[in-house]
Length: 325
Image 1: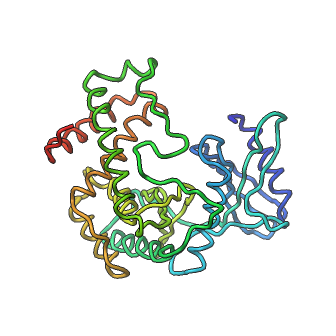
Image 2 (image 1 turned 90 degrees about the horizontal axis):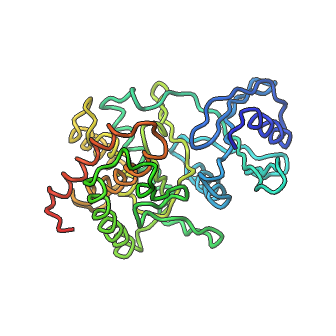
């Protein structure tokens, strides 16, 4: 669905199911999903998300609702709440075309703030560590209902929309023989090691956010909010930690070791860090990097610069740990 007018039609059909009267409907963005800002006649503001068919499933959406309600109930973390419709349902399915699946819609409370990206400082990194630890406390020990079959990070391409496209002919103009050699050897290795984390730590698995990045964290004065739980999976707290640190591993504005220690300092204020080695962190960050080396082909008009920098970093990981793959 890529018709802006149809987006608005879907939004209005969904709003009819809620107990408020719409005043303004403002299109924000079409990214992984379509986002609108809503204002009702009482001045309340909401965020509407129209889920793209290839970004999630209905089960994913219901799992997101489950985790957000769980985290809200446990307290100590600022996240959006999902607004139920008049009939109490949180996910709306809107039928717009015969022969096509319904379009799924959710409405969330609006949280004021700016992306953490561009607003980082030492206090923010400590605060982020605390918030991440509180998130892990909130889902620790929670048995996943049998109605859900959450995905796990047990292979490089673990999201529904992940497709290994780097073999396809239309992308070869960006790809070298070395790119193929590195990807063909590192992917099976990473898949084996990622699977081992699940086999060796089965008792420690819990529901995690799985996409903690500087754009899924909002800051507003002294407040910090976590948003976008759509990619929730069953994993280890270390997975969330590695995903967050990935974005600062080679960030020129920050010293990675300093960011890491500040984040750990905040995390340990709330709960002990999980046991891990530097290799574990590097491997998980490399797995995300390899995923993006494939994904960039789908979303960038010219991925050459990203590929050049990140292929080098994958090779550095291989050499650093003297991997025979």
